[in-house]
Length: 76
Length: 76
Length: 76
Image: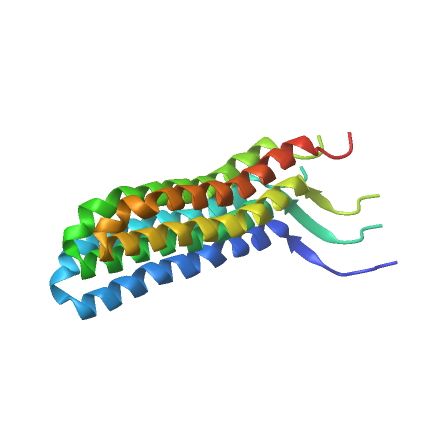
């Protein structure tokens, strides 16, 4: 008897959710930089470093999820 | 009888959800700092400490989820 | 009989959801304080106590989830 023909790995679901928040967060950081730079072009150099810093730390959360999906292989 | 051919570790799902909120929250903090610094560059030094404080406490929530995913290995 | 080759602990999922809201909430609190301080620097001392109060009560929700994940170990 075959109840359901589902295969796959739930780790992919986990990474998918881990990419959801940082996907929005990195977008917020870049959106703020774009709007701030358009309004005060002379501030572009001052805030650029914080844009890259914010991008890096938020993106890292998603990449940690990618690493974790490989590290915690279930079952065996 | 094989009900479903699913493998993996639900801890990855747990970390994924734990990274969702902080991913948005850290993005909000950096976005606020970028916009505030562009509008009032003289406030950059005053608010920088709060940006890092906010970043640290929000990021910690996601990293606690990462620790918990390794700490609570189920089953065995 | 092998139902599914999934391992892990659903408590991690629970903590993840518990960290979702506070991750956004603490980010909102710090973002508001950064923008308010940049616009009215003389209000920084007046609103600082409320920033820390808001941060503490929101962060506590996530830490309660962390405690609960260790307190309610299932099964064994």
